Image 1: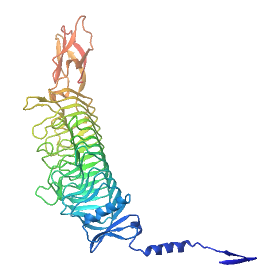
Image 2: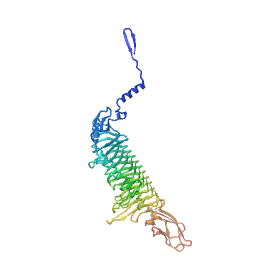
Image 3: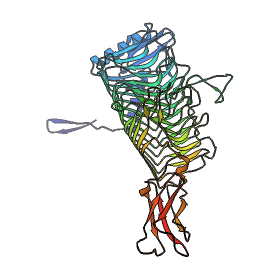
Image 4: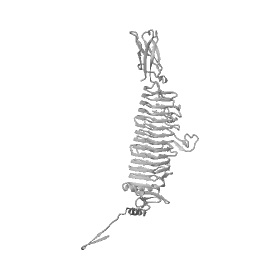
Length: 561
């Protein structure tokens, strides 16, 4: 401080020197005076931790103990939810450790709450037959992140009557029932806007109707970038009139398998316990996109999109890989093995998928329920039917028991269907049959066009004569158009021509109007010609008078339209 005297006035001049290093050091020292409040924890409103006396809840800023140690874990969590709700929301940081739940921790009617763990945070409930977490009663804007749910007798997370829920970066291991269940207490009450992202599922032998993710009546559900390494039952199961669902960029493997040794070990280190599907979408669900998933080595079907006409519609199944599924018998096709894609319902597209080496048929339309207005385009289908007779693409195959379905208004275009392994009997197969009720079930209004088909032991394309309105054209590997020359010998009035089409394989004859004949030699005045006796192997060219010396020559074209 300097002093300057001017007359009777005394002026004090204060000088300040800012030393950044010293100031930073002072701040650091101040923080070190409260070692129990770490900088990371200051980002959280509440801390759940544990010591030798049990779990406790404390304030993330002041370090003040709010509850514990000692009370049951579910009470600790519920107190945290209540505390934050009163404060308008916030973040709970669950520190590393194992927290055992005897009863569910219920987050009911709360908003704007995040529950975040560390890499070593484990939530377990070996005697809890409910769920570890329940998000219910109108809760909204809830995030559950970076937690590990392990060895739970019941469910991991149950969501009911809630919205804007995010489950991200969590691990689910050895869960007895559904890992994540989105359920409702009554019909017509939807869970809306729910994200399940970046989670990992690895399970034991779950209950028969459970799944890694099981959703009933949900709208705007996004299941993205998750991994199922193995799961005792189903993978993603979406049903009961759900809508606006996106299942994308997941890796799903070994559903229906548990780790261990067994006599019939299909996959090394795992035992098949159920024909569980990788993905199931059904029971009236609509507006579903399944994109960019890799589904492999599942006990059941890669994806079963099963909703009858008037119930399930607007499925987009694109850019997925379905590889080596249907490993365990007893799936949706009775006692048989599942395949790559099985679909019913209406107004779907199945495009740009790879279906290879599956136990049953690669892509199957209709099984017990109708399938209508479906586009199957640009798929690569190879070496399916590894465990049973099947096809690359099949329509109207039998379902459970003896049911057949009606396939109608389907376009199968520009697919690559190969059979180097010799396991697929048919490239494309369309069935019709008369059942015990005396009615004929068939497929009609089917366009099979522009496909490349090769290597099938029975037939490249097959359909029965009863099937109506089947159009087959422009396929490589199946002759549906041919042309040539024919001569009626001198003195004769007809010639039988083998048209060379592949329709003899299916017992279908071209319509006579589809055989075009043009004379290439001059006929006598008044001589007429016509086509008759068109069969699945040949047709006859006739003239009204005998052919002259040198015969009468014709050019012909036969096209099945």
